[in-house]
Amino acid sequence: MVLAAMTVMRERSVDFARKLSKGRKTMKRADLISGIVLAVFGLMMLAFVIPLQIEQAPTGYVSPRLVPNLAMIIIVGLSGLLIVKSLRKAGAPPLLRRCSVFTQRIDCVAEVSAVFIVALVLFGLAHRLVRESF
Image 1 (cartoon, rainbow, N blue to C red):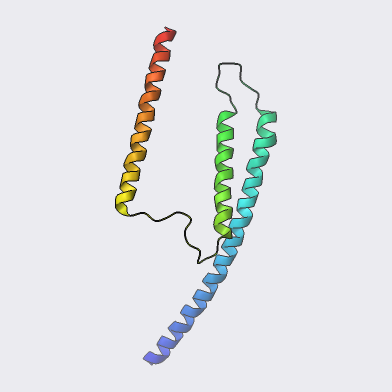
Image 2 (image 1 turned 90 degrees about the vertical axis):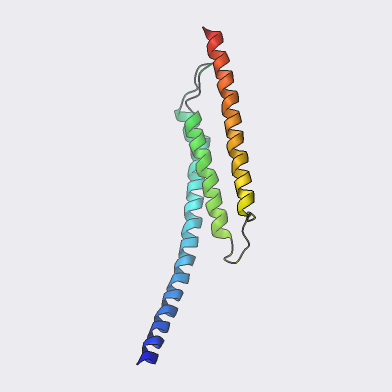
């Protein structure tokens, strides 16, 4: 009785593993297709739609094309990552090296410090500009 139940459970787990591996192949194909479609969409927006539909701002103003261009650049970049991820083999080594916890904390502290320093510099520059304008 127990042996029969174990055999049935084993067969079900093997069937589930086969279905799961087929699903991964399907997802890789879907990731590749959606990555290509998003990359083409983003490049078309950057090349044709944004320049033709959004006018340039007068001198001294922030361009209204700035945010749409940034959004499309981010979409194209992320779709490129999706394409690379879908083309990689299952057993391939990771693209980025794995760091220890200590190294990751030092990197985080360095990044936060850099952002803080840049924010202070920009605040100082903005303060001077505002003070000189009045």
